[in-house]
Image 1: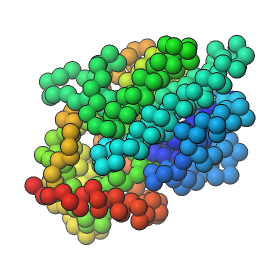
Image 2 (image 1 turned 90 degrees about the vertical axis):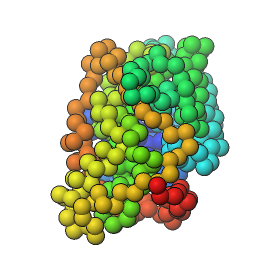
Image 3 (image 1 turned 120 degrees about the vertical axis):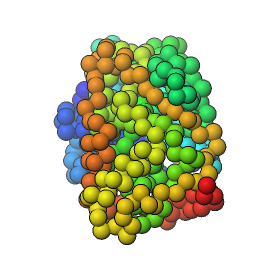
Length: 358
């Protein structure tokens, strides 16, 4: 591929993907990002003067802009990360999720279809639209249930999950109806460097080293499959290279952990690596707070399809991934301070300030 268009490339997963793509392939990226609260060009600081990274500030819902970018750069692939992605934010303000995840994806697909239909036959056959989605579209599992497969019926339980489910269906329909060469990936919970500190793992790290409370919803026994972001990026590269058009691939980290276990693991690593924190052991800061509405009990991914068909397997164990993540945040406290703007602090106050301790 000579050029790729990446949407949401200044966010957590998108920026990790761009850095890894350029490092692995040396090929050029056009990065379209609106730069909302979680999109940060500091995530791509090492590529600031790199001619292979072309940043464009803009909205995926701006079909005219997307069309112009496609016409100008003639990409061989689009990797569509751009999305509102935080469940709590979707509960407090669902409209942004409908606008970005559904309408934005629709307009991306329309602009892409027009571009793809204009291509010569050989380039048409090579083109790919890879839509990055989530396991949350499948709903919630009980402890004894089998993990999600690609054929698990959709049953989203939050506005965020519902908006991603809708976008998945749109992508599928553009393959079935128009022949647009789409592929969808549904991943489990990502963690690693450059994750905005509203998500569990970076929030715990940042709060703990400041001696602030570590809020855990409900009883802390909600289970997620944890996927190190570098493994996710390698999976996306594999799917782009060898995935079948029209298919869906589940991507997981083979690391089911409940939230309480995750927080205790982070605290133990911090006890070792950051013994100068105001409160030691860090686990003393754990506080249980009122659960959020519609909190899914368990997610689990069966990634056997992508392993069997494409030969991808995660490389990072949860223990090693957490250690690398904690070390990264401790080494990049300047980045943490930069992203914790007034808007971020306001959000934390809104989401956690009114929750009762339990």
